[in-house]
Picture 1 (tube, helix red, strand yellow):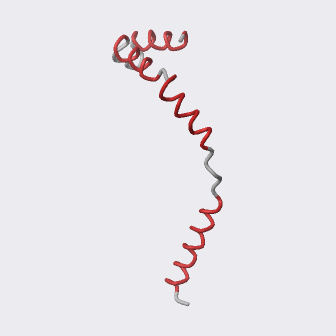
Picture 2 (tube, helix red, strand yellow):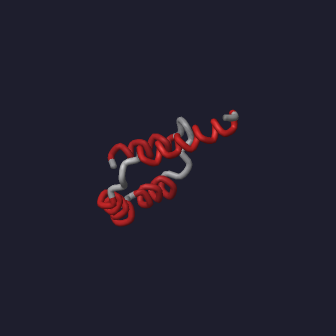
Length: 74
């Protein structure tokens, strides 16, 4: 067997092993995560506060200190 055929056989075997090694997808957990992300996420609200109210937050600036204080309280 040539080196090329041996390499192809090895790669195919590794691919099959990976296919069977993966666990099944739990659709119930996916639904819960998707629902939380779409209905209960506060990411856009927090991003709005950080960009609109606190603006640029350069290292050592007063705005960085204010933003850090606000985030710790929140």
